[in-house]
Length: 273
Image (cartoon, rainbow, N blue to C red):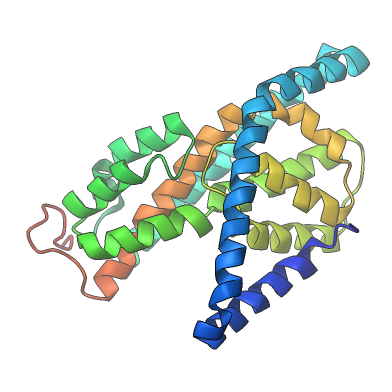
């Protein structure tokens, strides 16, 4: 009720660890929590179905209150998000593939291009799983058993775009929009909160907006600022999902190589010279 999200996240992690340690004795609570999570996912789907109507109302209020001039900075906001995602994909993912994945970044991006297109157009990490699974098993040489484990796990907790890049840029954008100065402590809280909250971000379209409220609450920014960016969320979501899914496939290749889980018969499984 007070918006102390970090404490809730830490407590939830401790509960999960305790349930794992108790094993059979903790099984009833685990099933209850899992069932509760499914209920909340269904509520989220219901909310997302009404999102277009809500966005229309929010944007009507924004334009009526402040005029069309307030929408001009959105182009820069979208550009910064896409630039940050592009840098992260090329520099971080490409660098890890070259140093730890045993193949050139060009080979990697060429092999996963069709899966990236699916992620970009569907805006869903879960919806991209079949294409990502085919790419990492048939062209990156990852064993099917390991790919079937790591890709769904990545679609659940690996949210670099939704949980790392987007909340940080959006929080700074909203702070500047309202003329609210941020201290170094605020930037630190943004990084910490965005990272922790990304673990709980569902791999379906639009949920990053919900998780953005967590970051805004922690640093005391007005939630009304979401109205400014809600209308263009779909455009941003394409870049976020592309980043997330690319990261899942990169991790699949890097860990599979380190654990000797590569298939020799795959066309790109051999290490680049």
